Image (cartoon, rainbow, N blue to C red; front, side, top):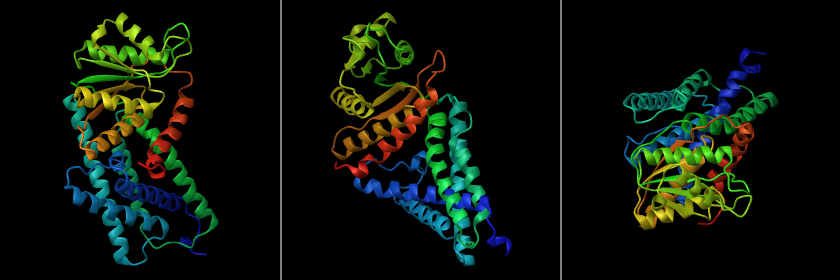
Length: 343
């Protein structure tokens, strides 16, 4: 048996990564045809510097090449050259994205909690694919298992990387309103540690003069005092005047909070939003707000831009691993929902 016919895990894992990136890229493009704002390719590579048509051409070509490379690598020299060219181009763009991240950090426009951008990690992973650009070796059961395992890891690690790299980055800036997402409030009206951290962070932003209003969104609490009323009472204690506090008492979940608050943004003409929650929750909030803004634009209504600010935690939550695991499932569920639900 030759070396190419033996089981070589790095090549199998590279094919699993290529399939994951290719499938995700094409799914975003196809989903955007059905639902405005579905395209989430900017979460792994930002090509906004290109005209829209060229963005679509580049991403479509890249998605197809990566998918083919993962399923059955090109046997011809021309096909292998095309694959290497696409991979190098994608690696170059992600490197540019990483440089842009450090420029924004240096200018003070963002404050990262984790100083290695996801784009830098993806650049390294893309370059690692270059060693696998060769004709396919005979497929064995072990290859299939390794490829499927890699795809499973990608589905777990990509949301986790978003939580750490994006969620922990502070994008605070001048805005029209600060939206604080709810968490548990106890029967006596007191706030859980998580909710206290969120409300305190939102109030800090208000006192810093970053927005004239603070909007509390949440659902029922453990007792008779509504979650948003408990949040309002705490904000008053922290020095926020009552006429600067807005409430959305029907924010039963993230989706409801986004829909309800988006209506308030439109009514009050608030195009710039600061969203406050825990870091693991912010990628889903950002994605949902982006889609709500795209839908508003498609319906001829004003769009809005959302900037996220992670809650400043007094201590690490004991159930943090559980929350992050649950958020992985929730993030994929929210991402895929437009494909399975009618507009």
